[in-house]
Amino acid sequence: MEGEGGGFFMNIVIIKYNAGNIESVNNALQRLGVNAEITGDHEKIRKADKVIFPGVGEASTTMSFLKKEGLDQLIPELKQPVLGICLGLQLMCSYSEENDTPCLGIFEEQVKRFIPERGKEFITKVPHMGWNSISQLKSGIFDPSLDQQYVYFVHSYYAAVGEHTAAVCNYINPFSAALHRDNFYATQFHPEKSGTVGARILENFLKILF
Image (cartoon, rainbow, N blue to C red):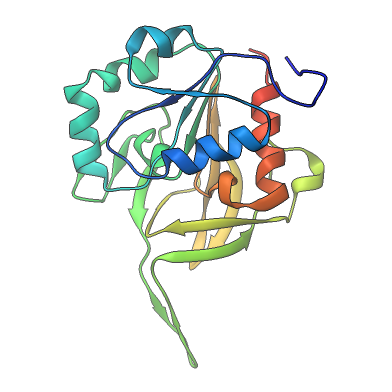
């Protein structure tokens, strides 16, 4: 629900685990008038209106931490809208090539490593870092005005295009810039670092009714 000052009055939880970038997501929500709680408490996560699963890090050690805390069982069972960001998206897939890691299996897509390409004049670098456009938008976190808009990426691994692809980006090859299945949404890019476009995407997620 949206308040008079443009803020959102709802219970938002950011999942706390051994991954970076959690505070920058919290700061982005505060700019939208949202006071989220950062927690790993299972009961608080279950009771939240919306859950955000951000992260920057390495897949196998992070999955080990999630299993240790029981979050690998909890997250796929959540019924409210859930938004994964960057590593969060990759961990929500079925498998990652990063250290041969089975993941949460919310999305059937697999995560692969970019292979640098050598052209006539340059080498396409890995990681994919910087601004790139998104297209073929198919999710409630997007609206038509966001087609072909630029968002900020930092990643060496990507989710292949598949059944649950909700946005496409092209870097070396087409990949899933976003995924969507039922109440689960995820972006490979960082909406919290993507200026007004990213703020719009976060707002759209906060407005989702499920």
